[in-house]
Image (tube, rainbow, N blue to C red; front, side):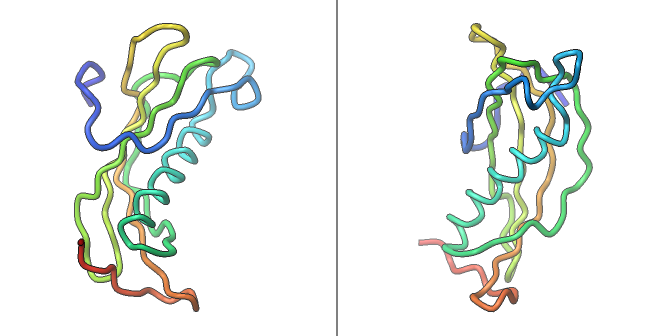
Length: 129
């Protein structure tokens, strides 16, 4: 993971890292970062599916650096592949450091989302357009 490159994908979610999301050292919990990534994937996948989606899988995720209290967490998403009822999204989490323009890549992952019908069963993802 190259922490100094530019974000890839579309900015989907921005949120502020608050003290309630941190440990005693001021580092934001990895689970909170992952939850924000999941939210962003849900937004992007629901837009693409034009309906309800759920998270089916998260591929390997490793943290390159911490998010600190006061940082703005920026989540970028890109739909990499659309199957019959599933979508594979590349997700990147970047921290805009508190009161600076500095952006650092925190982690990335591949999320697999599945489109569901009104009964909670997998349903085909509609064609784009």
